[in-house]
Image (cartoon, rainbow, N blue to C red; front, side):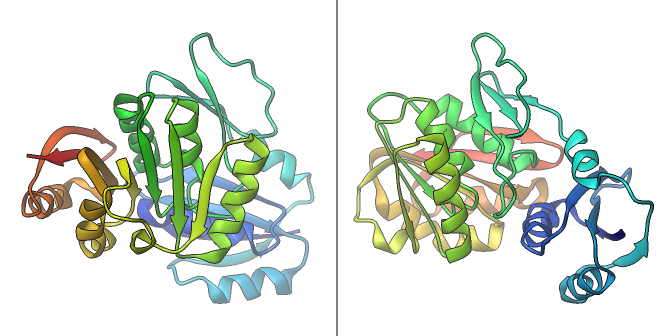
Length: 271
């Protein structure tokens, strides 16, 4: 058995987990680092396979070493614990059968083949924002859906209709499998907001980085109906003012702000 170890920034965690999951690893263990960031350990039966994956990863401190033989799948799964998110959600790995606490919505953790396991602070901020803004009759658009977890969250919260998209075909395929298993009626497509007609949605959620938000902000504004709101996250606190200013330039005011572990989520609506 061989262990690939890689250190990364917090913002890179979900992408690396998805990449490692797609590479044939037998399991992944995550460790938060004291100074911020994360160390990932992925386990492989074959040294050449581990080395090939290490060569493709664009991150620092990547190592491959032999390790003791044990059931690394069971070991890695044991590191993932159910978690209460916001006031409504109970996030739980698919292999766990823990009972859902009273008053909570059971949200299964995606298998990890696309960004968005649910444990990243930005994803949890988006779920909390959805709790505050989703209500019966609202049409929700999950832009850059990744694993599909936010789309499923909107369905569980009672959205009237949920649509979701991603420009990455692999992410759409993973999200389709995840949402199908959950029985969630989501209209999912490969593409971007350009494929959505103007004024078609009441609430848009985008867990994206600041650069992507800058590129897509005008399209986000276009697809929102009168009185619609946008939820944006995926950026750290030092970028929040610039994101808020960006939407102010499009005629939006910040209605709410949620923060966790240095990450920020903004809820904005037209003035």
